[in-house]
Image (tube, rainbow, N blue to C red; front, side, top):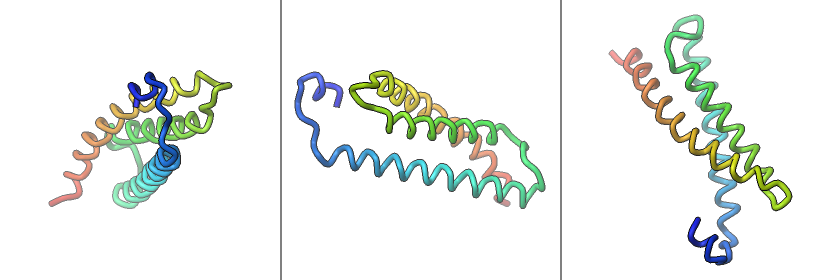
Length: 112
């Protein structure tokens, strides 16, 4: 995409709706997983904060919501929004990796 933009090639019409659909699905799944994790942890332990997964997960939720919000702000009048969106997504990639690793330790607690 970067090279296509540099060559001034027009963007396909289907790309923007697809990008929004994928992003919206990601926001929905992240919030759903947050809900399942909170209810499951409270149901199993009676409280929260048993591992590094909680702060990592809350950080990922915040970054996901920031990324979604910044995507809606992208326009020629707001050039800062694109760099905020891309930068947030780069950090979010690392956040998903950390949440995956810390989540694996949580899953191991539930398995016999």
